[in-house]
Image (cartoon, rainbow, N blue to C red):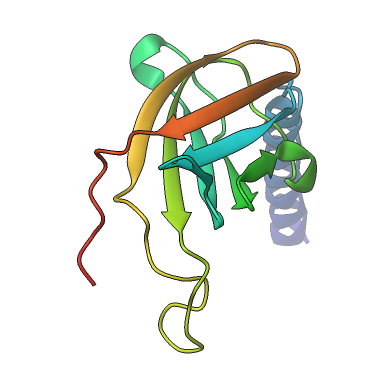
Length: 139
């Protein structure tokens, strides 16, 4: 009987800790972002942009990854937006001409491109131009 009470108490503490932890994370306000990604003057057919808060600049929080389709991205299609402040953005661009096996979404247009963005704590739009000197990876 005592052992069952101890076990129930332990489980209750774990659940309480988990719910407090989850609540604290969900209280972090996020902001919508949308925009375009171009490479060599053309919209990137398919890819992703990942926004990671720059901890080197004191910005901490969850990253968000957004899909690029026909050169456009929008956090409305993701589970949330960004937290604002300095971020490191990683852009992956694919040509959309894939095969059914190894590369269903296509081949890389350029090596992963990283840049820094200082995002406002409000809804925003970003137009990103991947430099043309980004080399295409070998197949």
